[in-house]
Length: 171
Image (cartoon, rainbow, N blue to C red; front, side):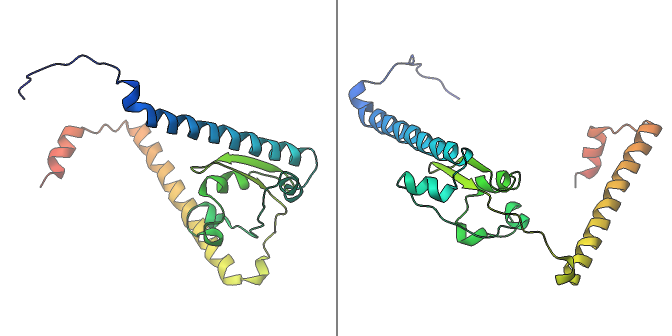
C-alpha cells in the first residue's frame, strides 16, 4: 500500500448536497406525518372504535385479510399475497381479540387490529395432528439429548482444543 496524500475531512458545499438534504428532510417529514396518523388510528381503536371505523373517519382505507397462520408468522407461508407486512406478523400473535398494534415498516406504519382467534379443531385433520405429535416428540427428544450431552460434558470437565480440532478438520 502506497500512501501519497492525506486530505483532512471537510464539509461539502451546501449547493452540492442541497437536493440530498431536501429529499432527506421531506422523507423525514412524511415519516413523521405517517407516524402521527397511525398513532391517531391506534388511539381511536384503544378508545373502543373498530379499526375500520377509525380509518373511515380519518379518510383512510382498511383491509380485512382473514385468517393468518403461525406458519406465515414463521416465514413458511406467504399470507394473503403479501397483504400483511412481515414486521406485523409476530406482534399479531401477541394480541388479544379486539386489541390493536402499530408497527413501522419500510414504507411507513401499519396499524392492525386482531378481530378474533380461531381455535383449531383437532378432529378435522387427524393426519396433521399425528404429524404434529411426531414432530413435537422428536423436538423434545433432541432437547433432552442436548441437555444430557451438556450435563455429561460438565460432569467430565471436557475441554476442547480449538487449534487441534481445526488442524484435524483441515483437508
